[in-house]
Length: 226
Image (cartoon, rainbow, N blue to C red; front, top):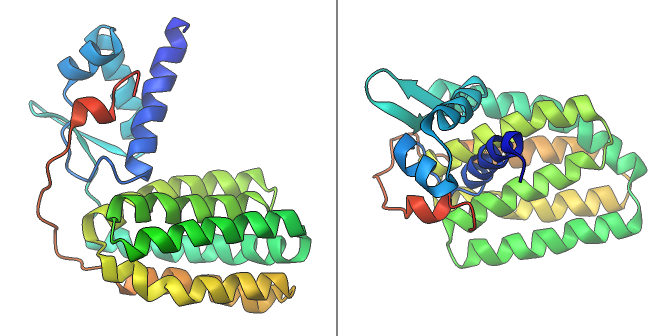
C-alpha cells in the first residue's frame, strides 16, 4: 500500500465503521492506538482525524483528543429534513428509470434489512438502512446529489446510533415495502412522497435523550486487517 493511500484507507475504515454503527457517537479515537494498529506515526493519524473533523464526523477537543461526533437534537432534525429534500428528488428520478434487475436488488436489500430489525440488532439495522438508501439514490446517476446525500447518510448513522431504538426501525418498516411497490408501478410522485414518509417516520421514532454508553472493541473496529 502506498504511503498516501494508508491515510485514505484509515479514513475510509472510520467512515465505514460510523456508517455501520460500529463507532457510536462520543467514542474516543486515540492517536497512539490508531498509529500502532496502522503502523504509521501519530502525525499521519492527526492528518486523518483532521480530515474527518472537516467532514463533521469527528470532533477535535483541545487537550482531550479526537472523538466521534455527537449530533445534537436540532442537527438531528435538520439532517432528516435535508435528506427528505434530496431523496424526494432521487426517488422520482429512479422511479422513472429503474430496470427490473435493479428493482430486484433493492427488494433483496429490503429483505435483508427486515431480518436485522426482527433480531433487534441496532448496528446491523443502521448499516442496512444506510446501504438501502445509498443504493436507491445511486440509481439516479446524479453525482452531485449522491455526494450531498452521502454526507447526510453518515450523519444519520451517528444520529441513529445515538438516538435510535429498535422501535425506530420497526415503525418505518411498512413504508419501505410500499415504497418499492410504488416504484415498481412507476408512480414517481407517489413514491417520492412515500420516501419522505419513511424518513419522517425514522425521525419521529428517535429518542432524543442521550443513550447510555456501550462498550466496543475499538482496536478490532479500526484494525488495518479487520
